[in-house]
Length: 164
Image (cartoon, rainbow, N blue to C red):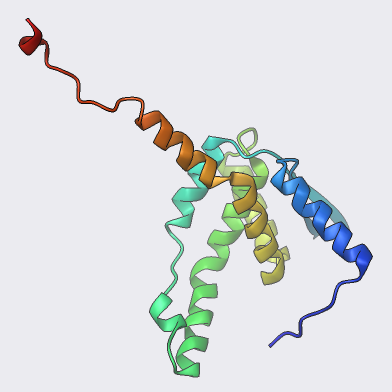
């Protein structure tokens, strides 16, 4: 198990600022390296079209909850290995879709960026990215909005034949 690291006061402030930026929809960056040069990929507001594309791929992720909660350590380890084999490329594609947004999200750029991210992102960076995306997507607001919109029509419409 990884030891829990105690953050300094400065690190706590930096972490809090990052979280506030995400929560206030300012966005976040994903850092990679290409030919020795660091690249900062900026993710700003995530429009509904990108949320839709992400959600489509989220459903393709293969996770075996039963095997993860098994008492047999070997079974849990095998499940984790299978999860990486099944989902790593798909996770890189989800990151690429999010970075590209709606402007540059065609199959060529998505494929190239997916390959680049697949070769550069580690599991810790994937976790950070996922937490930021879930905060920035704000699924709760979307769900509340759809509930409110569907509640506008609270009664069934009367048939025209009955009113005449």
